[in-house]
Length: 143
Image 1 (cartoon, one colour):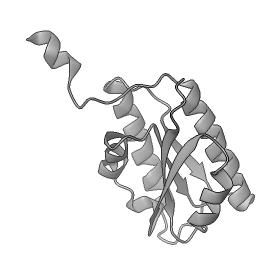
Image 2 (cartoon, one colour):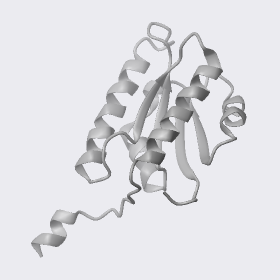
Image 3 (cartoon, helix red, strand yellow):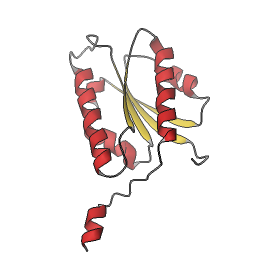
């Protein structure tokens, strides 16, 4: 693994917690954390998730509300399905699975989120680094 800091994009519900507190809590590791607040985790679209990888993220996580606590009823369920879909897409294009994560708010508050982001960072760090080139390797082999 290179000494270059990992880049992790973290989408989170803007009403869940203070993003600055999360950045301060996660600031002691070799990780460039970009926190992107959204009105609801269910507003995170597949396009946003894939764009994060196109712009250099090594991993993307979405923080969702506790089950039954979503202000928009099922936003957290929609976010979970979209994360799973993108994880499958990443595998299909050769980046491998596991670069996406769902972090569900729990009774542990911000400390729990910080621990889970750190666990996610370690998992990404252990995975082989692959860059998405935007090209389809199957098209090159057919030419």
